[in-house]
Length: 300
Image (cartoon, rainbow, N blue to C red; front, side):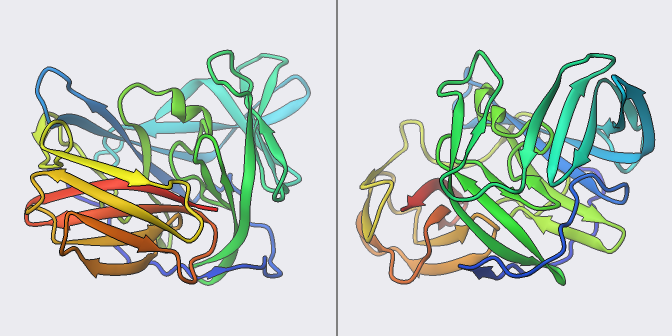
């Protein structure tokens, strides 16, 4: 296991109204995004391959089609360095929108629009994704460090954007991450010169290299978890089958990674009540000794 980035606890506070704030750009040279690429190794149950790819902009630009694009650099080993230039795409940002273009192509794609509001849609320019529009279901504000940032959540796929952070799944190919094989990409953390801005609560690490490592995540044949009423309004019912003694409690995280609820599990069936939780996408993590299972819950 290679050396990890320094782990700094971050605080997220959610608000139903967008607070007055200065827009924080996505493209900044001081930031590093660490993304885990997760693939299941199907011949061996409960095994999966996880690798990390770190990316950053380093004030290197290139111009074509009358526009100037930032060049992205990536590495599979951020400790040793070896940052390699992305020879295929360039990125630019203007008026709260981020564009991606193939090198020396006159075609560019809108990948972020942080001016979106509830009810708006984001077009996905891909022949492999249907429907071609992802719809905004929630817009609020979160406090990251000492700055409020706009957060946008979509319905299908259950995409989440945070201003200045990007997609919580695939920052440089948002929304289209849902076409990935296996579990797909997952944002681990975003850091800058001050430390970590975002840390994924499910992994709590900026670097994972666990090729063929067994994770006792009971699912295939061992534990069957079903949910009645998901998306939910006031409540949903969780049913746990198979090896139930492994799970003794659950943690509920909001889309920003903030723990909003933690309770024990005493039966193979329990009800998750909404209470005062705002609409959005949540991660329900069943926990126990050497066992965990995560499920996405949508509250409408």
